[in-house]
Image 1 (tube, rainbow, N blue to C red):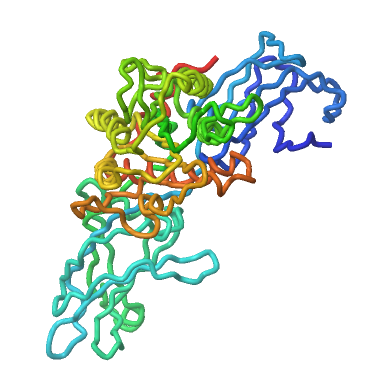
Image 2: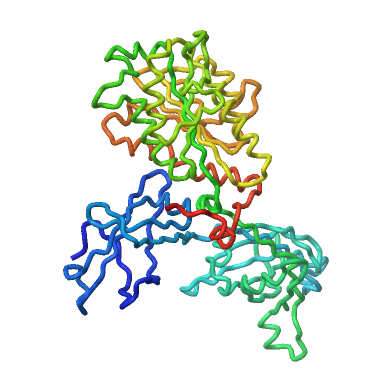
Length: 503
């Protein structure tokens, strides 16, 4: 009988105290969820593979996020009662991804057969992928080059998947036609190839094929070919995935900003959105923990800057829209999500809740850090700013300006609306329904804002809220770095040796 929730088990390795298992476990990865895993090691004493007779050697619990962000995770095996012995387990992750790369090809031809009486042929080229069921799928059709027996067609891009279904040895059939205005194009000739063969045209080399008309070949004794087709260039453009960047060492820098405006209500009053209930966390805390718990797996130092806005702060009690909630402006970082929770709870009695609700200053503050990060030209830090607010923002024009500026930087903004205010204005920041523009009319470069009202998740688990706001993040990370042509920091070989492992 499998344990409840057992995914799979490895082979048994006999009489060995340092086993290396060959079995691969395949699991689906979702950035927006905390995916808890438990690994158990058992000693099977008899020839019987049931776990009843097995000695339990220890277990290890972690999240899938921790494994992929470190790529190689080593932890002690804990016995019953959570006591650690001398044994440890190492789990290594690699992505089994579909191939998203695309290829750029440039063909020309020489001395094609002339099919037209009064002028020369008007050739175009078609490339087909031969499927496993013997059908063929058109992959690309070039433009027509008029009146030319040695045409050079424009280069074109096609994904490796659609070209050969990711199989470099799959047969590709290429046909050259003479275009006719009545749609009855004349066949000039054909040849077959593979993506593997086409890759020979990388780094300035050429690959060429004879273009053959099988009818002529059968009939004419001295028939050679109906022209030559030449591939001048084959460039492969690598499309990196979210996990390529994370496993390459890209850290997610998580920052939180909390609304301390007067509309939240006096924190001492149980109706206040900031009321600290002894047993029941308020909406601010629920949203903070739900989102923070996921982001923390991707940040090795687990130090999170936390800010407040819209309050008068000691000692002068002037209004601030970007103060550190630990009141240490030089180091606003809190240790772990728990550290942010504690800083929030201890700053509340010292603040005077005020207004207005301005969020542009805090977006600009994180954008400044993200902007410094761009100087490295590396995929080393991507910033996520979580803004928790109870109301409609007052500085909409400045906020739009700040978001358009931030859309050029390695950052995403998540806004959670707490309480029962009318949040319809906020939906406009989340460019899902139309393109967000700055007051001057400049559009966002990419959609970086997710907005959700907490009340939509009142009766769901906090995990559902996190899932909703974080689901877009992997695409936002990939769009940013791929758009800038920035590759993942280091490949696995360098990575294994340079990365310090977690205990």
